[in-house]
Length: 187
Image: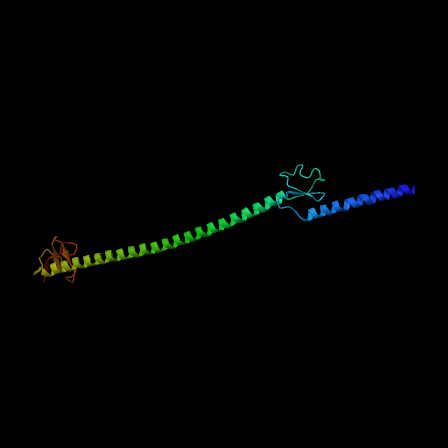
């Protein structure tokens, strides 16, 4: 019996002696993950299988699946690039819109200024025209002869207009201005 126990102990010792280097190799393999590894198996080895199904079938199954992490990292990098590109595009569009708005405001201001100047010139021309017409009427009225008031004229009439109506204006300026001017002044 003692011989049996001794033999069993020898077998166990031999198995341990053989197993320790294998465990060391597995531990070493677990520490150094290959760059192209898609999974780590339960026994510590790595797999480069493209799908999870059957990746570590001879090694106790998949302990950690790395392929999704790579896809997640790639997706995160892509999303980050897209976000940066969108931010640059938005910034560029904002600057363009600001320039367009500034240009529009400047153009509107110039248009308003031009319209104001045009209106001022038109008003000035109208005033000059009215003044000239009034001066012309006054000159015409001043040139009209002075006569005795006719008996059919109103008592307060000071002039007779060219259209036959009468004016009660106290001043020559503007008298009969809408009636063709003064035909004659009354004494």
